[in-house]
Amino acid sequence: MPTGFASPRVRARVAMAGVLLFASLAPAAAFAQTQRQLDVHGSYARGTTTESKSWGGGAQLQLVFGPASAPVRLGTSLGGDVLRPEGGGSMQWNASLDAVAQLGGSSTVTPYVGGSVGANWSTGSEAAWSGARGGLETMAGVQVKLGASGSAPSLKVEERFGYVRGQEHALGTRVGVVLSL
Image (cartoon, rainbow, N blue to C red; front, side):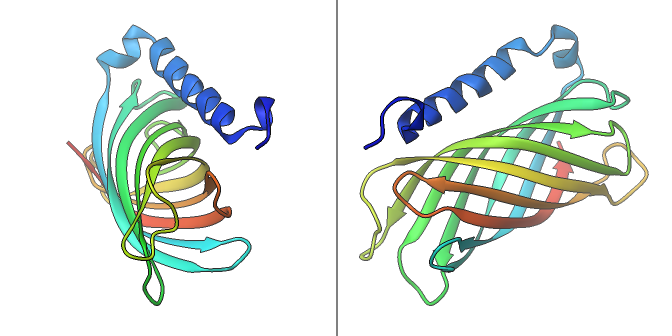
């Protein structure tokens, strides 16, 4: 097992510390203008080595901080997802904490970038591992408002790249709807 910062355990802890630091440093004024959102999405993932394909879906509860007119808004989300390999096999469950920077404020088209740290489980008679394993992902996506009002739903398309400790890297696509709460 690698040591130092090359270790997946250390990278996961550094990523989590970054997410917590991000959340703790958000200015009080931004919290006064917090927008709550629900993201419901379908997912597709493909392994980078074996090219194995998985399909699934999930949901995230998101908090976006700052005024809608700000050129950059920061957001966090807590979510859960499930993936099932094409042709059957063990299901993979994920609980994650994401942090993103959204560009464009109140634009109709809002691109964003960020990162995610999560806990992952493999279940079923063909489980790939036992217990929880940490995972890290980077993401980039875009939300497109489907109406003129600030509370109109948005269509979301997102690409993710990352891995679960001890597993191959994967590229994932999420397509869904974001609703204001």
